[in-house]
Length: 124
Image (cartoon, rainbow, N blue to C red):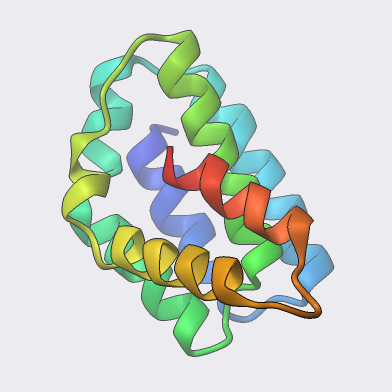
């Protein structure tokens, strides 16, 4: 099964899963990403894909923790495989991350340093 097919199947399943089941599916997706070509990663992870992830977060269908797990792995692959996922820069998800980073940075009390670091890593 190609990354495109796997991603479509898993992303549709994510909406109806518990957070623990989501994490397992994202780990499975990350393993599939590891075995795919750079071109296929670029083909699947377009702005529309990131916008869909953003919408799932907004609708509380995907936890931020699981989103971070996926985005960090994509970032790792991006660096390791030396690929560009330029479509992220034009996505709603990228804008959402920037707003979350700014919001977390402005907090005086109850700042979640781990979340702040994770968000920055995902953005980069």
